[in-house]
Length: 108
Image (cartoon, rainbow, N blue to C red):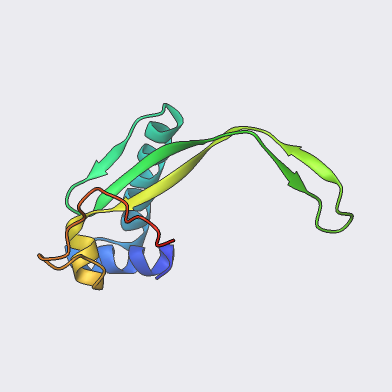
């Protein structure tokens, strides 16, 4: 689904013009972006949440030359799907598949 498809769906569902629907979609996306720029979490219960994650500085390699390069620390946006979205897509856990919180020890 593209942004244009989303605008068409909103316009058809609430019976407004595509221009008005486009303005609404743009406003929502801008508000999400502004909140993330401030470092806030955007929770759209039960759909999911947009969060900002910090990545540590690390060392990488130029794939063309093999030369080592420093990759600076940065912040990146991420989306965490909510339960209803996971269930709708089929990625939710079954009721009996809860994690115990312990790692299994490797056999030696």
